[in-house]
Amino acid sequence: MPGDPNTYVAIVDDDESVCRSLGRLLSVSGFLPVTFFSAEDFLDDRKRPHFDCLILDVQLDGISGIELARRLVAVNDHTPFIFITAYDDPAAQAEAIALGCAGYFRKHDAGNSIIQTIREAVCGKHSTTA
Image: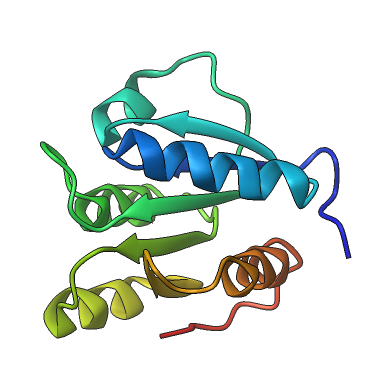
């Protein structure tokens, strides 16, 4: 099932290859990906579209993905967010879940699981995947 062609998904990750590969995966799945290499770039972009979902790297230089989500939650931004990480950190995962993430994945997890979680999050079927 393809994504809605008007569904914008932000990818916030400081690893260019991850942004590129996730961007391709989202594109072929029917989504419109927009990449940011830092949380600061995301927050500073005044021209960004309304995002339907966010994919946030847990560990970023500067503002972390966890801190970015915390800030968005604090201002009642209800955009669903999904975390990806290269590190297995139970404390970060617990904090991500407490913030209300729609999913929590390792960077080596299957792309189809991430796509399915985005679809569920965008459709309002909020469920945490760990």
